[in-house]
Length: 637
Image (cartoon, rainbow, N blue to C red; front, side, top):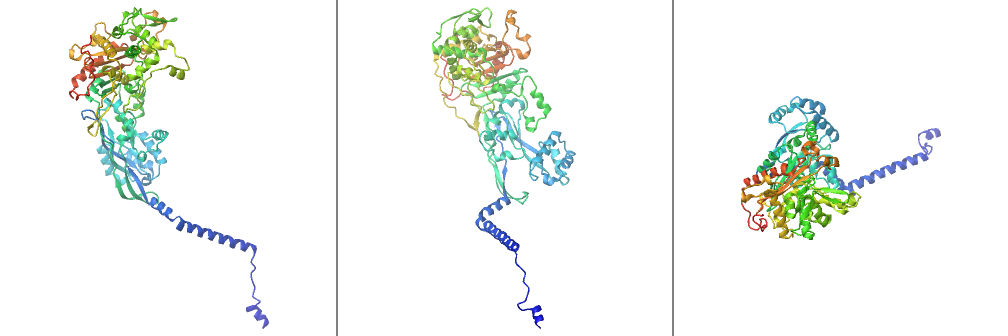
């Protein structure tokens, strides 16, 4: 009996021993459970608001809607940049599956260039699977309809209707308006380099921004403000539905000062020359025409120009892609002489009637500075020096007045200053100083540098736009500023009274009389382009700027004629002028690259342009107070 009690109950039951390992495992379990409990409390109680917001953002996304780009018109309302319907195709890799296979299917319906195909595949690797990637733009209606008809067999391929930039006058306005193109990483880097955050709209597939010209200079104004839409997405980012939409605000349409008829004439008149011209209304600074030749059609750049076509433009020695009127910098040559004359008169280092003897050269130390006329001009005064463009006269008075005072007058007349107009890559030219040479060349300024500057050579550089501004200021005596935007949303930009330059009227009158004689005196360098009508006489100045130094051997042989030299070693030809001489309305500058003499190559072009501008004039006289200041001498003689 005692044995049975021992087996089935009582105090004799067996016990399992509790070891140290058991205590450790139990403690670990309790620690893990406690940690999980604390984390659950933290997520559900302490940080509940934060994670509720994150969950909501995961469910609802904000999408950007591209705004409508502003249209551009000339001064008469003729469109120069519009938005056209763009039939395009995008692909969503997540829906398409095998992207290459889907491109093959699409390629059986429409032609997809190899470079487009490579770009699409590259972008698809870089972007999320659910982000649309542009495949091809600017399809014809037939191609677009064909893709829509075959949509069931093209999963992931989405035909879309959007807007694209179109330039109805093609190459006529390329160097003024510019063109737009796809946003590149370089564009984004440039924005960030300015310390700015790129606009979210720039991340949209195939969004286009201004690349050159006005399109780039005021891109944000033309672009407008993007809209937005609120969309519901699932966990992988796929769109479920649209919840809300706010349309963007398009850019305001702009009316430019450009006259397309005059612009067309300028392009035709420049012909096959590598040249540039600017025409201004001196009453208010309106740029009526600005042509750079040869030019190019900007529309292929919007569509996506082929590498072959781009290389042809890039390798053309006449540089059609280069905006010569805005960023081409040339020695102004003798067109700079009015600047030196006014500086010397203002400083009192030359008297109005003083004469200087020109034997054909001026000797400085052992070096001779030659006049363009080998035998010299004899005794010349200021008026005759402009009429016949005597170099020795300007060597002498430049030496007297000095480079600093010459520079001050040049900047007063608009040279060496960047014009405030909305065009990308516009240049300021160069009006040198002693400090500039010391800093840039690590050399001291020499008297010979001043002499070269006195005839618009040496370090002096200017653009055709600056030369037109200088001419407008000489014609009016006022600080005329160029402008290219005439109106916004149809409202004219008011023309304020332009301040005077502060130059003595009698000094200005002397310079103008010299410019009048250049064209209207038998000994003037541009007499062959005179206009016989008394009410439209032209005043101006020819210029020839060297692109190389004439060697002693060449001079001993009588100097090679420009025509005997390779084209790219010939002198540049220049002319600046205004008309009518007694009551200026138009100012013009013409630069013909490697054209030789200004009187032969540039002056005839300028004359024809001024006559055409007068012919096209339809606006009538400006209201009182907006015209140019009276010259004080109705018919300079």
